[in-house]
Image (cartoon, chains in turn cyan, blue):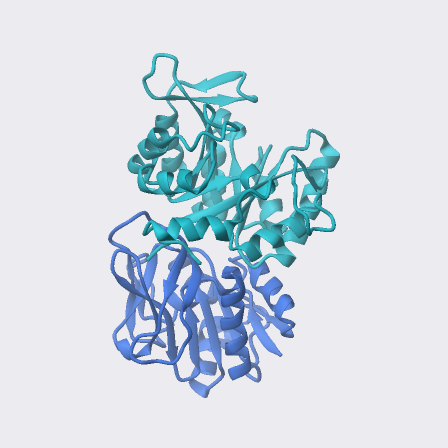
Length: 253
Length: 200
């Protein structure tokens, strides 16, 4: 039976992982390659590397990081953050990324999704959506520019359009829950997971194991992504999976 | 030493990196430098059945029959073959993905599409050996919309379930083929790779 996936997310800037990472036994906690291997050994099913570099130099460094990660890692990984052209996608794939996620650039140029899917295949084209509950309560809108812009009125319609264009997976982040540790947005996740013919990765709000059980059982997510609960050492991927498995959810353990 | 076939259409990088990690020496073969047959060969495949078959029938050495004919001849002579993903599917006679395009026809049967669930299947699935075959169970990483349905079920090395049972790997004489990606399947996938290499 196909397993539900657990995906740790690493923010990378200038070749270093950022945000408070509190591992005891890592010699260099800033090294994304070393951290990636730790998560792989814990049983992570995939990894997401988000390039949050603001500078051109930082972006160039990312290609080198991707090459090193690809040499070391034995599981699939996705790279995203500021990807805006087909050439950029192809370069990341050539460096060894298995998938590339696109977000803002695709919202303003949906044909980018089609170009990636046609050239590289849908299986490596992940569309990331930052979704926020609309103020009138009906559905969700798409945010870009760090939440400063409402790019689309209807996030689900955007997701459907993107899948038509060739997006192979949807990385769905709840803007309302991100960073809150209040659990995943189950209603949002379920609405997308039930309506879309491609896998949906839930993101934003991860807290304890219960939040993962909920997002798989009630949110119907195919995969769930989290950062700080792993970086803080609060949970290992393995520990999380043991609890999830006890609830009868198929996970790789 | 093995020969890794790069037909020019798929990304062989992940298999190359896997071979590096396992310290398995290899050399490249392709449409312009056909595999010699004195080494076991690996064919990783990505993309549509039809486009892979077309690529296998192109190249400067087409006068010698190209990759497709060479692979068929070498397998018939007993050269060990490892197919990965579409490298498994092209072994069959044909695929519903591209009707009318003949496969290599080394394994009788056809390739068919999943009829339920999200397509493609993306992620880790458990595999087990049916028919009392000796092979270790484990979890492996799949990305596929189609799977092989061999006419002779005894060639199925591994079975998995995605809204019904499907063939996850084939073994017949000198042919081994995985529908999943051993190079992306963690320690277990690397172990399967290593077992094949040690056996050949």
